[in-house]
Length: 63
Length: 265
Image (cartoon, rainbow over all chains, first blue to last red; front, side, top):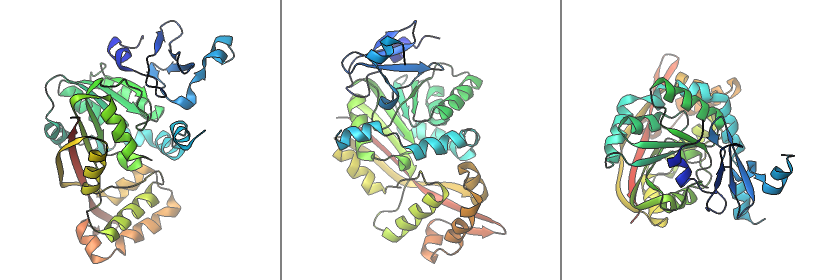
């Protein structure tokens, strides 16, 4: 299930509080300012800085 | 890494461990699901119809359910995924599939500035590592005029030995307990965060029986005797204030609860 539009509008990066980009296919939320990828597990966004994956590592596919 | 960043990155392991283990118990806790208490809270909040509400440290979701049933658009945030999975299951059973759940920390809210009409937080700030920071975050995410409604177990004002006793038994029961603030402390923290305090109430009590109380928290056997002694050997004024009464093997008592409503000016 994709995450709701209402939730997407207000979710922000917990680190910089900036905008996130939602990838519906990969089910991720990315902060391009912090270069962090937040995963969505069981339809629940995991908005913990500690559990976010560095963008570079995620794109290499070894996350 | 400076200490602020360190705090951002260090989830409270003891809280996560405690609530991962006890999620099923909290889902069945009569104290947390008490319908009258929740209806009172919705009334105390007196929010305009149909506003957006974020329930912080929602746990198994009972406060989120009460505000959703009152017609609000509700999101629930918690630090422990096991609790959120219980919350979502219970929400489904109640026909409240519209509630959205997010994993996150109270002190590091993953929401945009001025994005929410109301924030609620019930019976959980006593676990938070940094309540001033939590309320500063609440102020940030609230829209102008938006309200925060806090309710938590609370120490009495100006009584250090009562507060000490209260927090000591809470920590023996559940080491992830941090602090029960007093009504005056809540007012001061809210004002310090730039919120305007509308109402602080300290008239409510939460009745407990010892056996249920330790079952919900999963307190290990080896700590039960110390905990029981904490109650039975408490000074008379403590026994009177917390309404501690022994009934055979059982101990009944009542925790004082603070309710605060504050708004972002």
